[in-house]
Length: 117
Image (cartoon, rainbow, N blue to C red):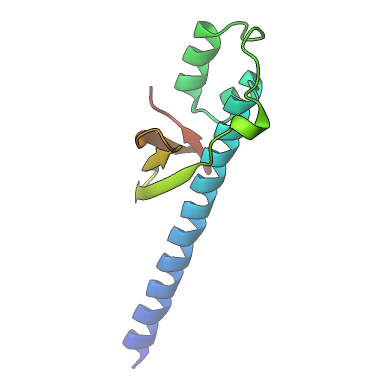
């Protein structure tokens, strides 16, 4: 009886943790899309893993000439799937009418970061 209760408690905890991680990942993806749409390169870099942020900031030293997307033209972000394995995740992101694009994330210091590098 105690074993069954323990298994049930673990299953509940595991599902709760996964749902929490998926919510955090969705938030990062949406924040990144918003930062991209508003040409906020500093915010974009904060949402990237260390390696990707370093590459991004060296490749895009001054993106001030890239203007933000007009709010009415921004496309909604749809998340097709989230696959989590330990401290990495793969997320399928669609901004209709464009096809689904895969994003890799990794957890750095407990925070999910985009990391396609």
